[in-house]
Image (cartoon, rainbow, N blue to C red; front, side, top):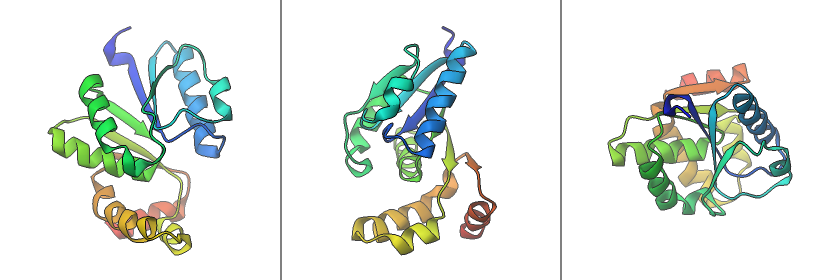
Length: 162
C-alpha cells in the first residue's frame, strides 16, 4: 500500500476501556477505507485484541509500563519513520515529544485527550505519577501538534496550562 495512506495509532494496551475501544474502532474503520493501519501497542494484552481486523498491522513493543519504553519506542520510530501518530495516552504523547526532539524528526503527534490532568494528579498515590509524570506532562504536552478532546473542561484546563 501507498505509504501516504499509512495511519499509525499508539496505545498502551487493549484491555477494554473506552480509549482502547475507540482505538480498535478507528483501526478497523481505517482498514475498511483501504488505509494501511499500524497499531503500536506497549504491551499486546486485553480483551479487545479479538475485535481487531486481521488486516491491522500490530507493532508490539513488549513493555509493561510507559516509563520503561523510551528506547523501544525510539528504535521503532527510527525503523518506521511515521508521518503522523494518533496517540491515546498523554504519557506516551510526552515521550513522543521527547523522542521527536532527540531524533530531530518532524512526525506529527495527535493526542486523544480524555483525562482531567489536575484531577488525575490529585488522585494519584505514587510519587512517580503524581510529581514526575505530571511535571513532564505540564512542561511538554504543549508541544503536541494536535489534541482531540471529548470534554470542554479538559480543553479549558489545557489552554490554561499553556
